[in-house]
Length: 272
Ligand SMILES: [Zn+2]
Image (cartoon, rainbow, N blue to C red; front, side, top):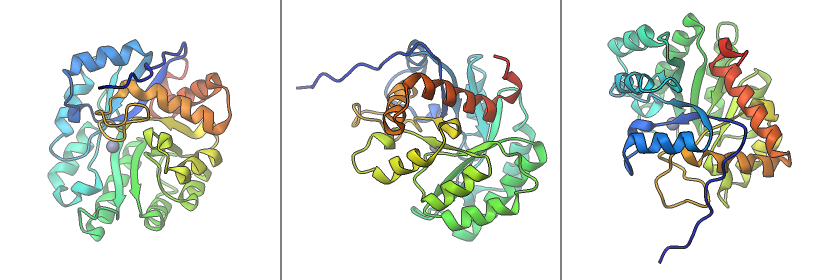
């Protein structure tokens, strides 16, 4: 018995999916997913690198369609696999045509999959790449608010003020710091979860001009599709939730988040 779930809404205004992991999706053939993505008016998709093992794959994915983009970087979970060779690869390709940011990089003290000191070193080394190349960053920070602020502070004078703390689940202190620095915060299906009132509080304090929409698929499927594999085409549910939480017209959320995404990742396409 399957309950009929609400269909994915399709809006007149375009959306930008700022964070997903296309190479992790398993439920259907990639081209089928991408067709569905286009059918709900998602205009651009950024697929995110996480490890030395998927840097090349993300670059290949970014070449599949004009509207697909990628990043280059190593996630804190994989920090112990980071090497000089890997750093050289990120440096070489971070300025490729379809590569829009260094990421995802950062600190994760919840899972502690890598030694914390190694995580901090690898975070700094990749921030340095972004600073040297003038690229924006995609940051992952979990239960590491204090150290994330401390390390970002070291780069205040060298890093471009373009980037996002994605899948934001940290406290108001890190949110305040990031927003004051001109960063964006990325929100996803977590905003639709019953228990996530703390995340909705952060949405309330974040100017809509500094919000990026993401799915982080295949993880964190939004209501009403929880239980299924997440995919970028569920992004409209995140947009609706942000509008509801911020008590703003949907049109305003769509245009503000679209502009924030363009400013962050596609600064040269501003005239679009
Ligand atoms: Zn991610």
